[in-house]
Length: 266
Image (cartoon, rainbow, N blue to C red; front, side):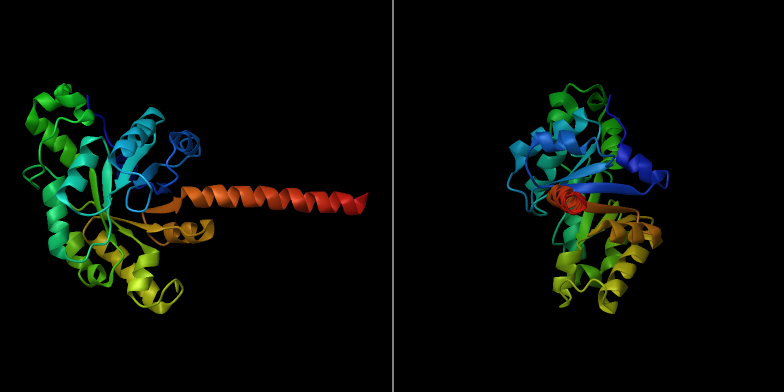
């Protein structure tokens, strides 16, 4: 029997969620990250060095270790949407959105009737057509539309200009703010404390909540992430490579400082 999306269930219970981009391309990394308390992984086929076949293995690894698998698709084309849902992604983040019509097409591709026109495939998520719930298509369509998330990114000036319309669309479950690209698009690259950038993220957050949608944002540091959660954002994303770098750098720094202190005391 097809299961609930545990990530969505947490958000429905007003829990704040924490996720990580997955770009390193190793199932062993998923095994490690799944033990950290993260709520979800975002398998990144936009910037990561892998695509469908590898992503299938990463989705399976997430399922095995009890962490919700999402995929950032490489673009908003029909095949990019369909295939990642067929292999078992429980949600898709769609990058580089620039218009309401583009979001309408992603809903068309990613949601079954009556919400959209998603093509019916017998992929691994439905055990290649043998899944019990797949035998009743009305029940399967209702499950898929309810449990698989469609999350456009707001990372362009064009998307920001129509964010109220985007968030009002049926089939859109939430928005992820791509902070770096949004700042570049606004002409204020990496100026995350500027009034223009802060006004933009507040506008996106408020549009989401007005229309009953969740809003996620990149947590560049732990302090910034905690501040976002305190100010009404529903979830944050960090990065697997950043975790590796920061953890290793902190370990090396602590060892060197401890060594110097002991040497001075000898």
